[in-house]
Length: 124
Image 1 (cartoon, rainbow, N blue to C red):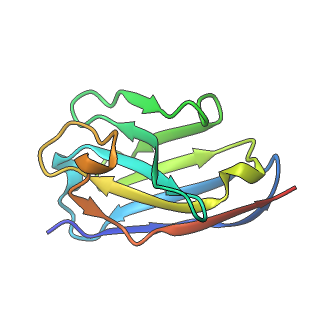
Image 2 (cartoon, helix red, strand yellow):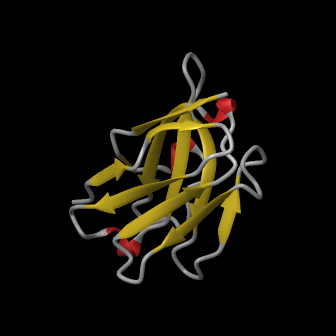
C-alpha cells in the first residue's frame, strides 16, 4: 500500500529556497508516476510538477518553470521538490500524489494516492 508523507515545508523570505520531500513509507511507488500539487488558501489545488516513471522526464506548471525542480532518488522511494526564488504567491499547502498505473501525475484526477501536505509560507 502506498503511503505518502511530505516534509520540508516552512516559512521563508521571498527569494529564498526550500526543499520538499515526499517519502513512500509503504515502499511501493517505485512503480508509479509522482507529482507535486499545491493549494493556496481559498483556491483550488493546482499542478506544480511531475516526474515520469519510465524515463524520469519532468514537467512543470507555468508559474514555477525555471524556479522549481522535481527529482527522484535512486531507490525510487522518494521524490523531492527543490524550490528556488520563492515568491509570496507560492504560499500554499503542498501535496505529493502517486499514480497506481500512470507514468506521471499532471492533474488532480490522475492521483490515486495523496499525502497530507506540508505548508509553505513566503513573506515579502
